[in-house]
Image (cartoon, rainbow, N blue to C red):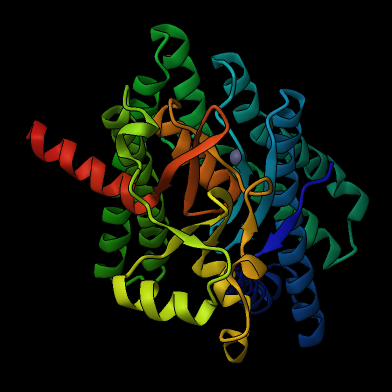
Length: 360
Ligand SMILES: [Zn+2]
């Protein structure tokens, strides 16, 4: 499906922990009288299979998103499971609902498959143990993910329903995210209670709760920010007096004079009165330092026709989305194909702070 799959470093931590827990607890207790080596091999195999199940769950979300022509940037497996990076908001409540429910449906099917497959493995320990554990894990995945708080799938289902009922994605997102925060805080509370009553495993529950709370909180902040930015245009926040540097300046001159001297981090490059490119710290860093004195700015810059630009009359919010999508921190601003300024993340933050202070 053209989706890249990444393993975060934290994945290895949980892989090791799970293998250890299964090899020293689950397999010896339930399926005794085997060798240590077999327990560890079975533990590692179960841990890998569990993440395959998580991956299939995420692929369920991704496949439905792709059907709605929403780009999927990739799937990352990390310490708390997996996450599919869906590149845009779904076009409607129904799409949101189907994307959200697809993952738990995949897990439900897997749970049933592993459950009914158990008799096939009767007497074949530890294979039976692996299949039994995977049936249990998939049931747990369905139940946990259906809890109605963002960022869990159940929270997305809740968001889809509120979106359908109220017609407002903003409101639906706020409600689902706040439900997620309540649930996250509840888990933190439960985890701490567990630790206090002598069960160190509670720290895991508390961490999951903290992760949910901070993700939901970030979502609430994003909605608030979008609210605050609503109605404002790029032209209001951009830097129209962004000095252009001459294309035949050397990188050394640029760094000494403007980067270190004035703290500027991105530059428009002009040649014969025409804007021809964009030079940022990113482009400067790509050239080895000892070559800075011999390299001209136009040899290092990103040519304007290759740079992602934004229209001066575009919504400020869409500029931020464009930056996120393209992984850049600034955009040249154009009007009728002429460059009229620059907009950086810093400009947006300064602008937002000003609006916020004026409203306060
Ligand atoms: Zn899911």
